Length: 253
Picture 1: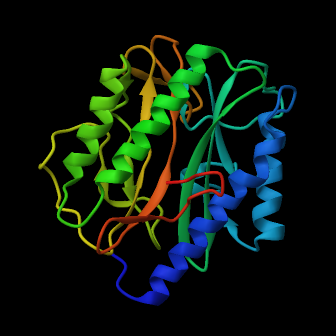
Picture 2: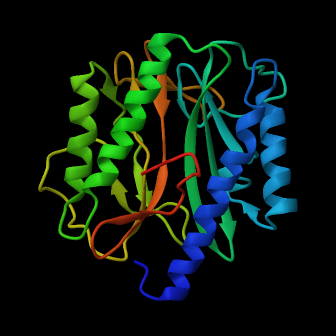
């Protein structure tokens, strides 16, 4: 819960920096580049340009700055110099920046090279799930409202919602309470209050919602091998709605 202007400004700065990392890396997400190279560019930008800290490095033993989740990878894909992006891939880049102790956490989907129509649709519907969820966030609403609107839009479009991974409270602590489920029933769960700060980050699958964790202990894939997409923003609840702290310049939300 953020209560002072100083705290709000700290989170605004961290959120803006995280958004700027995704804006910086966008032109480099092309066929032929390795996810390891994308990771290095993000690391150097955060450390050298932003004078900030990549939150993921050292987090529970994770060694990279970003997560790069390609095609059937739902989340936590590990960047690798040997993993080369190909035309028609879809990839999520997830980054968290620490500035003055505050965390800004966000992710964006990229259509690599030529976009296949079914991939473009998955990516678009998943972003719509996030935007529809953001619209319901205001004091007096409930966390279940977020879950229901995401689940309803995904199911209406014949997609499934990953249930094992969720959004989270954020501030001085990277992953804090409350958990923000991407499924649920309206008017249930915790009441949303002004000053709350949390992420919404729906993971939407083309096929089954079932997941499997790979041998590296991080990479999570769809069990059926079909594609998955995710978008994420960090939000601050205001008196009348919410402020998207990680909003990018290309967005009109």
